[in-house]
Length: 129
Image (tube, one colour):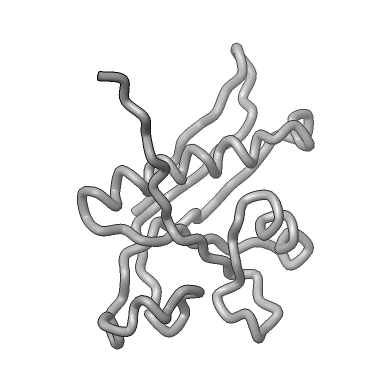
């Protein structure tokens, strides 16, 4: 079961994104070297099941903003349930976009696949005391 988030600018629908929980095989992880201790396990992942941007808002970074939102959700989940990755499937023509703009990698770098993964990283926060 997924949750769909709608993104609006003023009263206009800009896009939507549907996310759900999933898992990946350790052997599919792009950084599997530091996951050897999890061999045979399935680290939790947030799955981007659907992502759509209204044609009038394409090229205005709406997709980037929505993916940043999912990254924030994933960081929160990483603290609560150990979620480590974000996974999405895209058309092959968009692979370079997700790789260059958003830091995703293909699940199997040796294959031309449209299933992509990104390791969740928590940004350090400076807090004034």
